[in-house]
Image 1 (tube, helix red, strand yellow):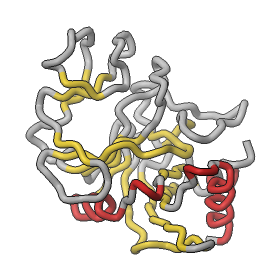
Image 2 (cartoon, rainbow, N blue to C red; image 1 turned 90 degrees about the horizontal axis):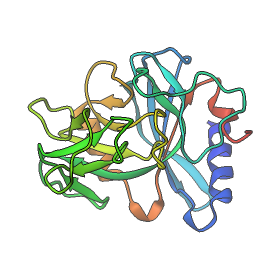
Image 3 (spheres, rainbow, N blue to C red; image 1 turned 180 degrees about the vertical axis):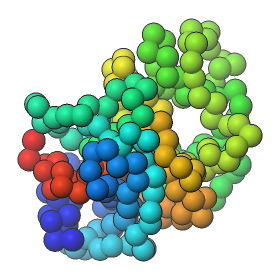
Image 4 (cartoon, helix red, strand yellow; image 1 turned 45 degrees about the horizontal axis):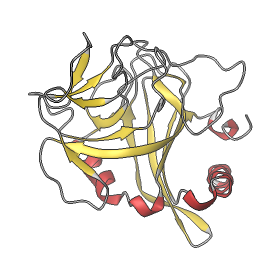
Length: 223
């Protein structure tokens, strides 16, 4: 707990005006573990406090690999997140909009997606790692994820700002969302847990996701 508070405080100082005051922290046993624990934290005054109970989550089926976000990866850092590797990204990431199949009352920005909204995972597309309205563009991709489909996996979720510049092959379409088994690279939980997190998020507090194996999370700010 003390180490994590120190990490969050260091990150807050480094980011000046956009200091995060909410953090979703995900830890796993090691780089290959497909499951872990999620704990929320919030800064009140000068102190970080745990919010809510820890929850069990599932990760990528092949564990984690270093992703691209607000952190700096070590020069010799392995494994590295790649497109299609079945790994969730490790690191520190901003959170983009929440989303779902239906309107949802929340303070955090929230987008209702349709079957025609696609997250593009084709590395050869100009829209790689972007969510697009396929009816409003010239489709140049052969692979994508529908943002609404019969299963409830994306009924509620949050977009993780991983690989924000869309570097080809570095991983795409990373979300927090609903599911009960390991994924292709997202972090997942139950519907009740997902909606509770969306309601908790406050855009004025610049929430972040901190995600890494337990023995690595304390090193994120050393690189």
